[in-house]
Image: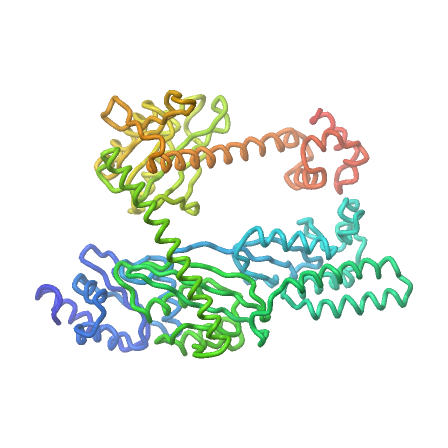
Length: 614
């Protein structure tokens, strides 16, 4: 071996000699026990030994981290396929410094048709579960999902309530039934067999099998017409027209009419943008874009292989075919893993010519465009952060900024919010909100101390990364409160602190004042300063997040508290009342007869509700 000092060489030699000749994963660590790299192998000893025997032929990034290796751990598995899955899970959990990492943790929405229920309904979810429901998607935009649901409810009389139905009536038919947009299973007005026909039609529509759906609807219309059910035939005619309109808009991408994922990427040094085109039944449903990062320049084969393993470890609805721009080392292993996961064969193909190759080129062009956009955005963010560090004289480059704000009315429903900005852009998945637990009455400074203490005590306990800058919405008093927390936790040398407050009006504009510890005079920024705009965005986002949580708690109390005081009205009946009438105001306006129409509401209870909600 040629890496490190002599004691290090002997230690690594001893470890390698004791690694079993079995499949599994290996975990390389440095002297501080931080994980540098995680990999999988068919034969662990052979794979790990190869790093140190053939060092000259290795990629520069690999040679760099090998020089830091102080320990190698390993976990054995029964098969190489199990090692592949374990590798993907460990990489996602530990985020090793020298692995290629899938940074975008976005969960795209799916539509879930609860076919495990007697009367299925439709809902939007972010994760696919093994619960016997039927899932459709993923959809790349929430707007797209809403439009699809709106169209389904317009064409098909699917129920919109969330009740658990067993065929027994729960209530009177709602307005949707009167408009002909629901068969009212909640009122017991439709058999499960007839409702199942609607569910089958919705399923065909969501699968994109509109030709099959049109044929079925036309047969139903013909049957209704022959049996002189002309009103029903007219409704079916309108459905056929609506489905035909959707069919006319859909563009056939693949004449094979297969389910396909088309994957391509564009890489520059230590980052890449991966593009996935989602094609189902030959039609383009959408596209996904992902960021991949590594500590050093990425290798082409590892970039694509790492993306495939990390992306498909989360995906449940798999296509029959995956098109790739070039082969990867583990092609057969990945194909077998995905086939087992899907239950039917999944093919990985590298097209050279023809329409499939054109799809790869389309995905590559989209990835290049996304890379340019990301680079331009990053340059703007870097400039604003550099200016912020210079203007405030920060000890640390403010790559990660956490912003705090509070919200309460006379001390009631007091909450705190924390937002996170990384490289000048919001990371909403890392936002946190806090319900004030220890402070009574109006004391913003004590509330801020509680929130910040809870936040940073936890980070220290978990040995988690700290932000570079903490930005508080407030003035000198808030700054002093934050300063006390950081001093108590011994963090003043590890984290910068600042407060942003609205100053005096100049030229009809509020001039923001930024306060720093141990400085009496606030820092002022030019009107068009990028760093000023960045701090304003962080402050406004923290304020928005705090206000939204405060309103949620307040509205929940307003809706529930009068009903909670009534003996005999438990959580289940409160929810039934609110679902039926929509609001406390509507409950107040309801007659005794309307209230008694709710299952379990007797005349005595209805009278109590009237008295409690004057």
